[in-house]
Image (spheres, rainbow, N blue to C red):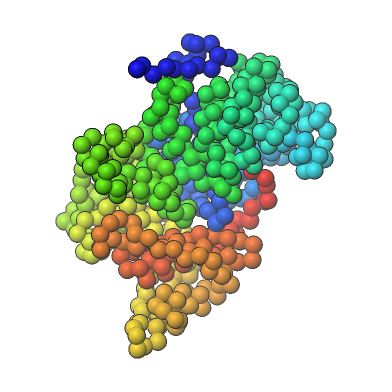
Length: 528
């Protein structure tokens, strides 16, 4: 029987024919608001470069008013990116908008993204304003932003809990003032798909001049419904989806880019729309964001989790062998799995490594390549085959963190059933080498204690996680630590064939992130 396509009757039939849904990625802004997921400028530029390669339409680079570090990161991303639009978030105030423009003006395609709360609970208890004052402030913000650029987005914070008629009034007013995109956020993850779709439909039908702007949605995952709500919104007429890689973000996270894109890609008859995303780059950027942010991708994560294409049940395995589509609705190759043809090992030369790294999206300088090649050769002596995940770990560990305060140069550990575990550590602290020792109830604890004494850190270990980068007994161990010092939380990550060394790398990385947070204090600002 032929599948029936059910169109949204509120939108003309011809509008359904492969309309584009713009992908607005906020990994560098909202994603970074995940506890401990702070990224330095070099790491943000690396992710932004890969987002552009992925085909993201808009990259939200940060919140320039939040800190000097955020401002500088937006500047550098804006200078680097040439095809994607680059957005800077700001509150509906003159100072914030001015700051945002100074950071994002370097972009080839800049966007100012300003926001103001519109729900009654936010208006009364947070803003202490009237509805009339909110409308006026929103209009003034958009008009001021328009003095810098015609590309202005306005977000109605807590939009899903806003009175629908007032939401339409605000959106109509800011569109008249010059906003080209209006965003409806489910800020606290409160919405249910059916009601959120109905709200989007209501906004589309009742907002004056809505045809002069793109309606966007920005959903949070507090009830595990961010992807479902975003798809319902697209079905109802929204044409921009605000997402993050791996769904990272504050609290339970944001709508996952890979889930939205692959849902549209896999189910084209649900809502006949398209995106400009090159899906074969999804897996590699998922890995990159995980490694840089320190946030592990859960094995059962949709699309990019380690188990996403794994089949253990005998019936499933038999079916997949006969025809993969019996139990796989997507091909692994469609997200970039199993597409590498080049085997990297100890006989691979510098030119082959450079070419392979370029195919992965890493354009290294001669000096950076020299550093990575040296580490690559050392790793290849320990492993028969060096996987892409191993190379990503090398680049992240050896190149993107070269300006860190602390750097592990040497580690020796003695341990066993009849000796007290001892560790000797040589660290470079601001370029100056220092040596220290420590003991503990195990080799990893001893290494941590030695590092802690040299750095004089007050950070407390909250979490310690070990996983494997690849399969096999020679796989690199990947360690993630969560540290807390006063009100600062950081995630550190390290990888090495020796799990003790990987643990030390992770601990040092976490301490560097603590120091980065100290030197780049962020203003406490609500997200969307």
